[in-house]
Length: 173
Ligand code: HEC
Ligand code: HEC
Image (cartoon, rainbow, N blue to C red; front, side, top):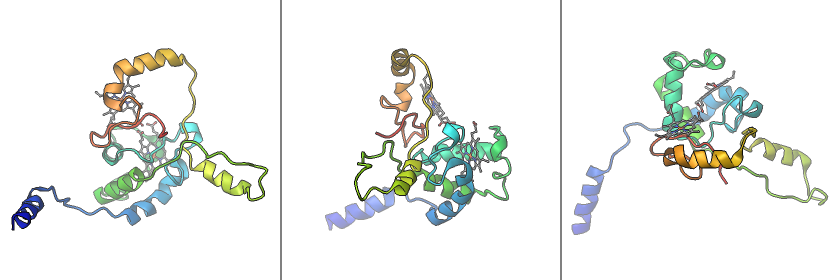
């Protein structure tokens, strides 16, 4: 009895999502985005097209709303983001779809001389990695500056914060 009461109370108190996300719709929309951001949202052209995979969905949705309302200029995406082509539900679905993609950062070591080594599969796997260009600079100085000015929000390891919609700046290790 006590348990049932607690259960009912929990059901009343828990926030019930007032919408349901359609990941299949998100996957379908992603076919358009993949041309630039990559099939797995891994980014393209050495980061010119930013990586979207694994970013907080609220962050992605916010950027799409900003593009759609022309508050964040993005010439490359202008023809893909307007109210007709990208209603609110689509923004929700594509943002959740991209957010749940987990990318590798490093290829597992393989023996290229082994008989079962498959160069084509290796190439496909390498495309699924995150694309972040290495920028020149003073790494030690950057580390100090990061700890002082950025880590409080983006996290010590640069992984961001899903709940607060702070984007990750680093790769997943
Ligand atoms: C023609 C190429 C192209 C296509 C297609 C495209 N994008 Fe983009 N997208 C870009 C470029 C370029 C930027 C970076 C703009 C900038 O530097 O501010 C960007 C930025 C973004 C950002 C902001 C990322 C960040 O870190 O701030 C999001 C989110 C995004 N795109 C989502 C999408 C989605 C979803 C689709 C598919 C509906 C899509 N894009 C299709 C080129 C494209
Ligand atoms: C007070 C919290 C806070 C601090 C401190 C902070 N950031 Fe951010 N940062 C954010 C949030 C939130 C966003 C996402 C903004 C949005 O939603 O449009 C962001 C976005 C970014 C982006 C864009 C990421 C992307 O993929 O589009 C970069 C790059 C970035 N921050 C770098 C830094 C650096 C470097 C520092 C330190 C010098 C720093 N930030 C300090 C909260 C913070």
